[in-house]
Length: 115
Ligand SMILES: [Zn+2]
Image (cartoon, rainbow, N blue to C red; front, side):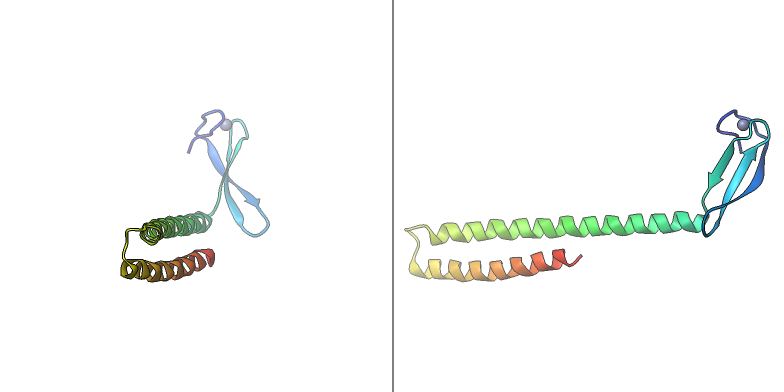
């Protein structure tokens, strides 16, 4: 271990405490600078919470992709509904499909709001 201020290699352990746990700390025998290190479990907790928030972001991005795809599909069926050259049968089928897709969209949006 090297002092981060003067570069001396003469570091010794000193006791420093925060509110609930000891902090690994080393003082420089030459300049008195103190280096602090948190406990490994605090580092592990940090990594875990970082990983969890990455997974939430990933899920949100996937949901957004699905929502965009459904919106694009609804648009496609709306074009069929507003096309005068379509048959009544095709327009009715498109209307049904739009209702189904809108229900799916509402479900997806509710799911992504729950997180
Ligand atoms: Zn030093």
